[in-house]
Structure formats: structure tokens, C-alpha cells
Length: 197
Image (cartoon, rainbow, N blue to C red; front, side, top):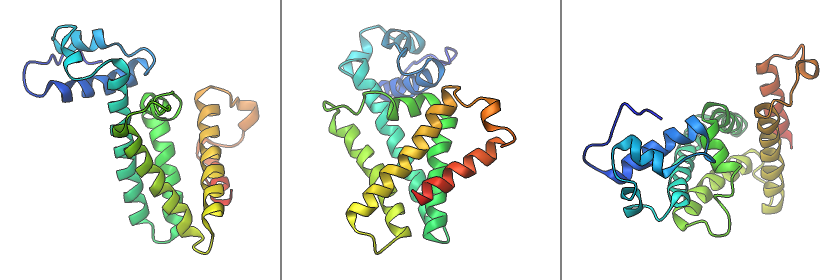
């Protein structure tokens, strides 16, 4: 976290969310501490609890904003695609961009239990909107497909992307497995498989 920017006045709730986003990237969602965030912002340990019931509630807000950003990025990708296939390709790239560009936030959104059965509507709503745009991008590629076929493609394609992210971030892809493929080659292969799942 950036401890050079203490909180002095204004919207403490927004400042807490910004600091939590920074902490999620710096130390990971598992290690994010309300106490350290309060210290960074120069407020009492009790101050965050006036805005968030607990650490999990703050993380849920960070994840919700992450899903809102992802939905916006998906919408841009879909709108910019000259064809449905190009739009879906860019949507897959957007997902991988989040995974490798903001790995802490990605882990919070997709690898933690933050979206469990007790997740607040303020989180499930944005997560559902991101899902709906992904569904829309897949459905547009094959407009005659029924709901079952589209959902099968969404889940298998998403699983392909998620599996690649897990292997890559977990250091499971060794050089002897991938050479002479470049990083770009791997991404292209994964995206191609995603589109044909």
C-alpha cells in the first residue's frame, strides 16, 4: 500500500475502498488488514467499522467494483468487435488482461469465497451483469443456439481461460512444457480453444 497518502478529509468510505484495492494487489486479498488500512489512512482502528461491518464487507465492495469495471471492459470489447467472433475474442483477452494485470483483484473475484451463498446483493448484482455480457458475447457467435448450448459454451470456454490462468500464475507451466511456444503463442492457443469449446 502507498503509505505516503494519508487520509485527511472527505469521503472515508471511498478512501477505504481505494486503500483496500491497493492492498489486495500489494499483499493479496488473504492478507489485507483493516487495521493496516486504517493506519495508512491515518484514522482510528474503529473508523472503518462505521462504513463496513467487517473485513469481508470491505472486500466484497472491492470485488463489486472489480466486476463493474470488468462489465464496462466487456461492453467495450463487444461494441468494438467488427464481428461476433472478434468481439468474443476481445472479451477473452479482457478476462486474461484482468487476471495478469490485476492478479490480486482477480483472485478476490474468481478464486476466493467472496461470492459464496452469503454474498450481498451489492456484489452478486455486478457479478451477474459481467456474466450476462459474457453470455451475450458467446450467444452472438452462434445466434441459432439455444440457452443450454450457449451455457455449455460459456462454462467450457470460461473453464479453459481459468485453467490457463491457474496454471500460469501457479508456476505450473515449465519451459520444457511450452518451448518453443512464446507467451503470445500460448495466449492465442488458449483463446482459440476458448472460442471452439
